Image (cartoon, rainbow, N blue to C red; front, side, top):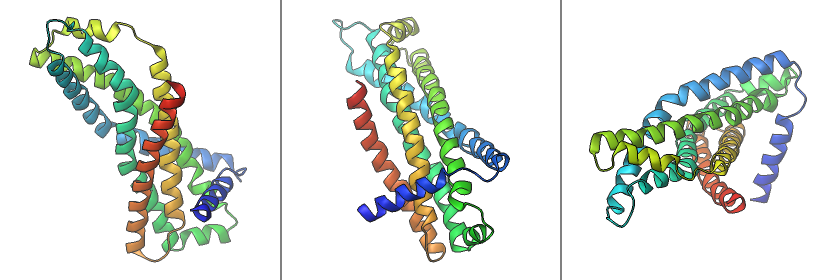
Length: 243
């Protein structure tokens, strides 16, 4: 474990060395931001709307009592969406979509000796291949989480309109009642950390791939699994520290 941790830290150190040419790295960062951000927007939107709607309906069902105000469902749905559902579930989905892509891409370059060719040409391969992905992931994951929060709350409102379990006015009152900006700060901190975890761990697994196509698939699988475990661990730590 300590050997792998040391290799991981050394790889990150190499990844963030001073680049040879800023314009090339900047172009790679922009390309990765488009791939990670726009490429994941559709799946994040679909998941967020349905999770927000399902959460609102379930809360309304569990709190169907004349002693409990109907607006409390909007408040609970808002806080659970901001604090947990949007950042954590979005990160787990992105680990499967973005993380597997990063690991398989770098792993394929390793087994086909493209990384060796870069190093022979004097290019800092970790910096050229990994740092743009980490920067793009830490930038775009928070933006995707913001979109997810908005769509999740909108999905809850849509559920109120379609199901009639709660009136839309009661839901909006609950959403506005007692809003604390700290919850959004916690969500954004989680998103930045999750973005770093996804890109760095999956890039590490891909960079040290050896063998052939079978090993590339195994590296991709390990990258996704380790990323998901570390996302859940980081979620617990950040929640405990900030709340």
